[in-house]
Picture 1 (cartoon, one colour):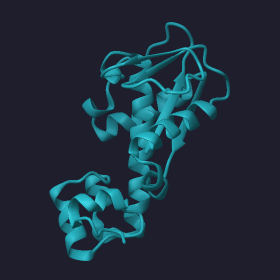
Picture 2 (cartoon, one colour; picture 1 turned 45 degrees about the vertical axis):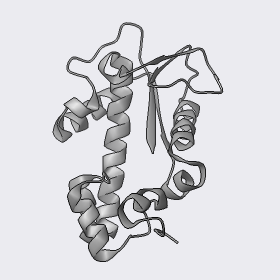
Picture 3 (tube, one colour; picture 1 turned 180 degrees about the vertical axis):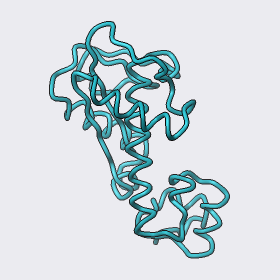
Picture 4 (tube, one colour; picture 1 turned 90 degrees about the vertical axis):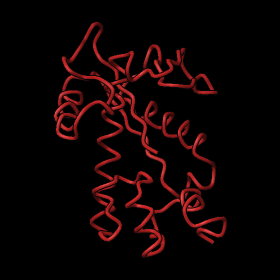
Length: 172
C-alpha cells in the first residue's frame, strides 16, 4: 500500500491535475515532478506485502497514511482525506468520498502515490520478470492471475491476494 500527503501554498493549483486514474502514465509522471517541485511539503508512506498480510489491507492503508503525514517536513493544519478518516485523528480532518475527483490536493497526493507504487512495481518486474509487473502493476488482471497459476507465487505476492487466486492454502 502506498499513500501520499501534500501541502501546497494557499490557493495553489496546477492546471490538469486530477484523479490519477484519469491520467495516462506519462501525464502522471510529468505531474509527479511538478507536484514535488511546487509543494511546500510532501510525504510518502509505504506498507509492504508482509505487513498487509499481518494487519489487513484497511489497517495497512491507515498506517501508510500516517507514515506519509509523519514524513512531511512541516505539520499540516488540516487533513483532506480520500475516502475514510484516520481513526486516531492526529490532526483536524475531513474525509471526502471520491476525494481524488473533488479536491486538487487529494488528486495531487493520489498522483504521488500512484507513481510511487508503479515505480515499485517496475522494480519488482526487474526482479521477477515472468510475472509481468510492468504490465499490470500488481493488480489482479487476468494476465497476472494466469502467471501466478503458471509459475506459482513470488516472494512479493501477498498471501491475502493469493487466496483469491489459488484458494485457501495460498502462501502456506
